[in-house]
Image 1 (cartoon, one colour):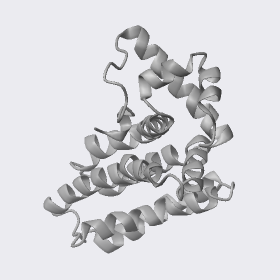
Image 2: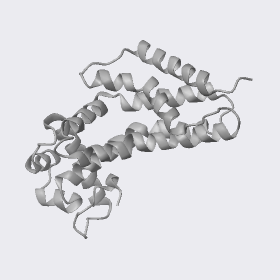
Image 3: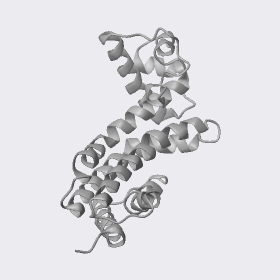
Image 4: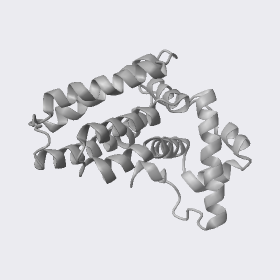
Length: 218
């Protein structure tokens, strides 16, 4: 079962219906607040108090604190990557202006993953990676893994259409990520951020370097 659902090892009779969905969402929002404030060491009592529910309710919905944290990761990354995924899937693959649409995809990608909340959650997971490596696995699958797969599909279509020439897609996607996103993650790990002008120059410069390597001269 997908880590995004957060229901692995949960009881069989997970609450359903509109009221249960609202309560589940309230638990997720409260858990994100607590985990960002206290780290993964936050107790279920704290999580329940923040959400205004009982510990039993949390266990009924998620089964364990680990499952709840995985669900928080999944929801956070869904929200962070929603716009970028839409641009990649709806525009980039069939683009007639590759630079313009790749710029838009990269801008939304960077914007989604560099909010203070997303960077803080990433840092919490990094801090817990030795004790709970499964949290890092969930982050990788729901974040970079999903985004890189979408980019690989879109760029592969551009390659098929003769607009790009990419002999090693895995390498190319990692290079693009390194050019436009990685500096933000390095700075974010130390609690600092790149200013908006530098962030835009990174995107434009990164895309131009990428297209200089893989674009087809016409």
